[in-house]
Amino acid sequence: MTTDKKSKGSSFFFPFIIGGLFTYYILTPAIDGKFNSFFGVKPEKTKSSRDTKLYNQIDGKVAQYRYFLFKKYFNKNSVSKYREYHTQNNHSNQLNPENDSYWQSRGYDRRPDNWVEILSNDINQTKESWDNYSNQLNPNNDAYWQSRGYDERPDNWQNATSSGSSNANMDNHANQMNPNNSAYSSSRSGNGGKSK
Image (tube, rainbow, N blue to C red; front, side, top):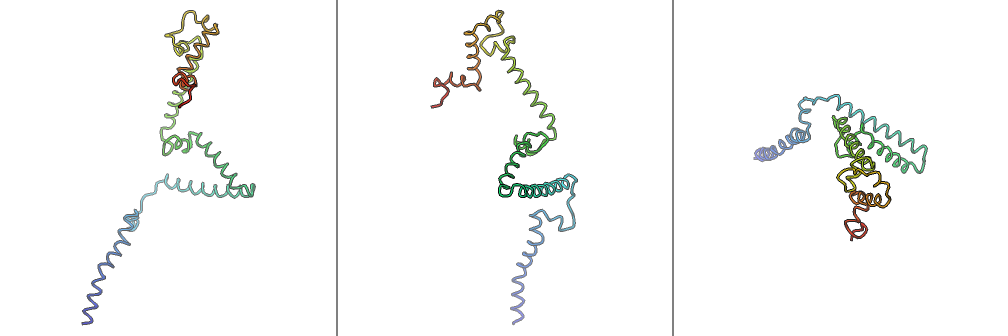
């Protein structure tokens, strides 16, 4: 009878032992993504992933060395000086289109492959807006007069620009049409641009 109790006891725990081994050796590695390495199938490492890992290691070593230099030269102010340096460095990276920080500060995950094309489109759009701005400041150009309520440059445009009061009126009108100018908001709210 005692042998029967032993066999029943061991058969009771047997499924739990098998379940535990299955979970430990098969289920957990599969969930963690290590299932292939368990069977000897190693994921291919691309050159870029190896390079990225190496770059990250180098960046870590450089950051450590830089911090030790700050500690050496600035003693008690080393942490604040290092933060100041990091902030300035990050700012310069955000202004450099070849750096990922530039693109991350503009809503991208990293620098896109067609970043040169994107930049050239932005530069062309910026050039167009600056040209328009310049034309609106040039009385010889139609855009100057259109921004001041005319259909085009009048024939007597030289007399109109030399008259002080009409010139001031035209400038005021142009300022009221420009959302970046305080005259724009004050002409719409009636209280000098202040919100209630």
